[in-house]
Amino acid sequence: MSADQTLAFDPDCHIFTGCGFPAPGLHTFLYEPIATVGSFEFTKPMLLALLSSIVVVGFFWAAFAKPKLVPGKMQMIGEAGYDFVRRGIVYEIIGKKDGEKYVPLMVSLFFFVWIMNLWSIIPLAQFPVTSLIAFPAGLALMVYVLWVGLTFKKHGFVGGWKNILGYDKSLGAILPLIMLLEFFSNLIIRPFTHAVRLFANMFAGHLLIVMFSLATWYLMNGLGFAYAGASFVMVIIMTAFELFIQAVQAYVFVLLASSYVQGALSEHH
Image 1: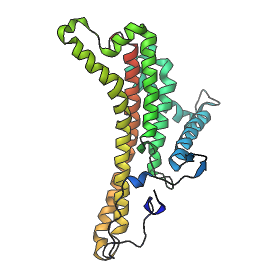
Image 2: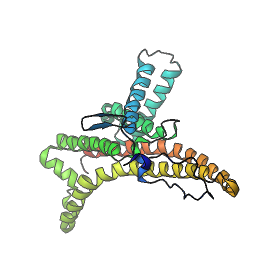
Image 3: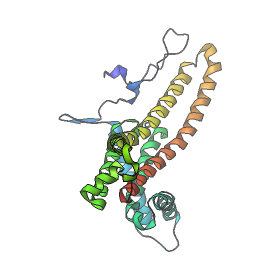
Image 4: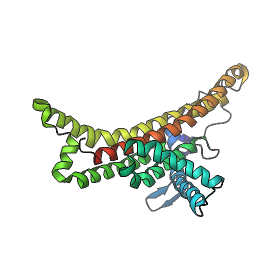
């Protein structure tokens, strides 16, 4: 990808000046490396993912490093966020007894995904890390390995396969078909959809914001000013909507992760 195909565009390009609309595309999600070590390229999305980790760890460290009986503002916010995931997701899906040990993981996942999403509307960053499939896929793979590992640890080798394949003798003649469907559903489709659901929403949201932002600038010429205002309003609307979607997608990702853990611990798939 050459430099002239990156997110940057010609600031002198407006409607009625003879240049076409610089429509965003896949090149919008590509960045020149910040640093290169051998064949390894360190890019802006990687930096934002690293910063996301630092933000999450730093926030909770600051909130709970010296907990007080009467919490300060930082501790209060930290407790509210932690309790939201613990009671609103983990306890509801896995249960209090079995779910307590998985609360730290789910809290970390929720806030890590949320912060990576939030970069989309942060000045200078303006890019949701999860709009690159590699990041949701990596997190989904981690949840997938946890789910498979817990399934066989809980039920043993034979019992684990029965759990994964939905083995139920009462199904009679259709049992082989059900087991085949469950095999593909759980071992192939499940991790794929877990990653793609997050990726697709962030990809589409970012593309729309970029499109309306570029359109606002492109239309700021001559009669185009009449339409530039409408395009700018759409930028505001899409940004507000994206704020909502960013939180929802973090919630859904952790909700599904908790449901997979619950399925691994239950007696029947």
